[in-house]
Length: 114
Image (cartoon, rainbow, N blue to C red; front, top):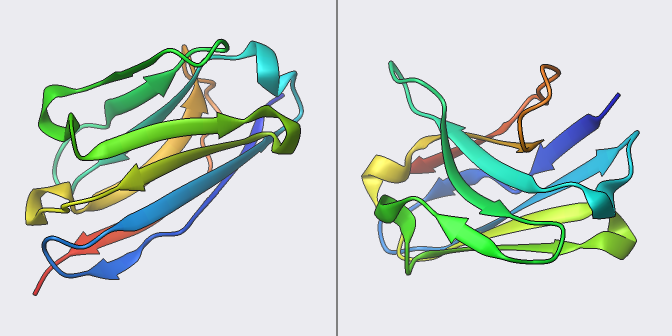
């Protein structure tokens, strides 16, 4: 049973940066591919970034060049560095294993607005 706790969201102006963190427990974190997902108001949840157990990363086109996913296996933590934020990045952000575990965390809200 994987448990996930996300943090680091907040209100930021367009062009600003945030760093999200997710601590995972209850499983062998280092063996799991991890992903950051987001759900904007009125939209379905989407996978925006993923990182394999070996550190290979991939991104949805809309965040390429702006977001960076990373992991620290010693801390059972995955990060999402978000730069050059846009209003369309406003969403609740979640982390999860890949494929996703049905037990989602509470997420962390990111609001990009002037």
